[in-house]
Length: 186
Length: 323
Image: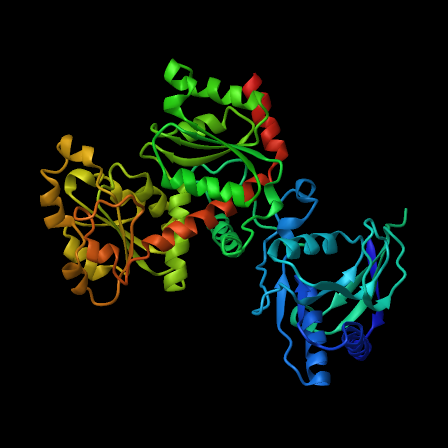
């Protein structure tokens, strides 16, 4: 089996998309009052960090942030066998009650991660509003959960293709790749 | 893809058979679980639909309640069976008790039993996951794990630390689990207690032996003080509780002679004024209540990792059990 990587977005393209998403968030919410940004473990956290810095520098405010690890809320724990390592979840210092939470993930696919994150947030408290914000929407939804703000829509053929978001902290660079898997020629 | 933790296998019988990586996986998994107990809704749905039986053939409040909290906070359904009220008192064997529970479709058994080896005996005969909550003087793995987590919390590491276990080492499953676990994580371990209560060949496990508690205090970074069970006095292991306290008891005066601050652990329940004085138990070096808090997180980690399961091994046990 061989794979091929096709760059979809480079560093600049991601930063431009994030800048636009930041403006969309502020516009949609009508300001930055009671706003908090929460990234979904792992690459959602880095994208959330970029979005937050963007909002902070554009609006000259401080935005509280947190992170969320959905391992304990997955719906496929029975099926996947060995247990995923549980990362920590961290509430924004101001809590989430009465806040507008911007929930950030790198890629939206089936919608199951977002479902798990929503359930976890509800167990933590009662936000006024939750916005789902993803850098890439690759389609393939299995649940009726759509993002509010999208960086880029990428058409992906199920089974042979996937989308990977790369972040400097984990992958050495910022970008989005389309990964194509070719079955062994017979 | 998602990183996965090293599998523990079907059961947790003791720390002796575990690898360093498996022990670290449990301690690392316990870290995020600590936070769940601080939430307003102290519950995550990870063991939803799992049925866990807490089968306690020996009286225990702390360990049973700690397991129960851990199970509840992971959303498992639990049943408690205390042997005195069960059909065990009518002469039913351990395996029959367990098979009857299995027939009601359970997923896990947490067992405390007075006989060393009971946990393994059960684990080999039923397909459910078995967690040893203390078997005779063999092991009490979750206590060893919570002790290590508490030491790591306060000292920042385990490797290279000097830990001395003080008291009735001979009858102590807590001591054995501590020795196996701490050595695997690279600590130096010593034991100290009356010669009648220290196993003769304990050196073969790789631990030092101190005959005077003053020497142990000079050496150690951490003291894990064991409970002196009162029936030991009746059995003639120690002449009197007052004499035990005078020679082996950990007092403030003794601790003050240490070259540095010593961390003080005790698995509970404490006999104040026997193995530990109140000014030590309630003093700034004591992390005894932190141990209790960590106990819930460690047990959540163990249940979570075991429930991830190895269906094929459970299958094998089922076949073996029917053969």
